[in-house]
Length: 309
Length: 175
Image (cartoon, rainbow over all chains, first blue to last red):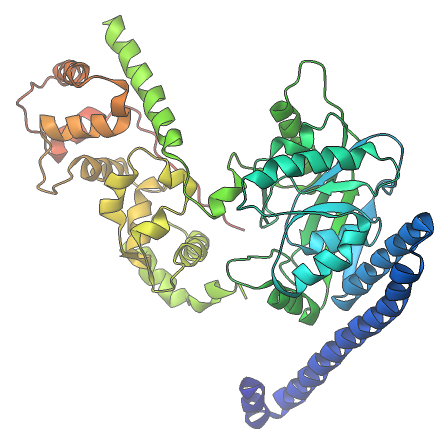
């Protein structure tokens, strides 16, 4: 603000510009506050009765809740002026066992995808208000939570995933196999869990246009709330979503090769570069195993030369 | 937001260019500055050893500890000067000087049998026995016309690597 004030005194032309910007900024803030408030009012006034009154009618309740979650997600997208272009057929519930996998840039990926189709998603359990939403509203679309720090959770999670896809009535399952947010220039290695379920894998590629705002959520630097705020105060969030051809495990293919193949498909479509790193390197150092492997390769070539002599 | 590059004026860039003998274009220096700021997590204007190790490719390099002794606590100008050996505009002489510095850990301008042996130890770890290492090295030195007791200086490196078709170029991505 002080900068704008400085401009106001210094120059008449800039004065007009400054006031213009000030108005635009306030209009923008009012815009997203309004959109979100209306969204939440509509959502809550419908969701709470549906959730509690339709106890006996599971089928109806599920259908309504699914619809409402899609609705609140579209309000979220609208609040940051999301300009999202969806390419390809829209995913839906179908009797065939399937799991959707997408590249991951920010938690907003989930909101962007959710507004079209109510997915059940696998997510890290978050603290704070996001955690509250997770355990109340998102629970109802069948989302599955885990705690990365708990090793025991892994097995439980794998079982939950299997159980979920068995039931044809459940919402389609969405997994972000990178396991961490990547800056939307690269794809890091996929975790193989999603590819071991033995069902059809439907890739989804998401590419953000950074023209107005960078949608990458750097969780080390920003809380999710601040991240959302930044998106909301920007002019627009522009992104493309591609629903790609479903893939199945080829005969003789391991789940790791399958994961790599799907990563290829997503990377090519979204124009991302593949890097051979585990996404968790963001939080920890690579193991000395990698260094030792390099040493082994070099040592072998030296020894080969030595024997030739 | 992400606009840190605009903090470099053209004048600043020229100064950095001069410092690295014009081995990088202005665009490349802007790119390197963005990377430098990303790596400088503490925002102190220099990159610490710990911050360098946050680059996975660097952390798994068998020579990373050795390189860190050259790299620890570099500011931006020094950082660019360090990287200049990898530019396609750098002369062969500059590249060889860089390689020599990697070998010459104690910076006394001389590389002995033991210096090279240390290097080989870093590179091969436990996959070659100490005896084999010495054997290999004796071979290599003899092939190049030296003995076990020779003390190599920069000029020797130039003689050995001068017409070896040395390739040591890294492209700086510019957007």
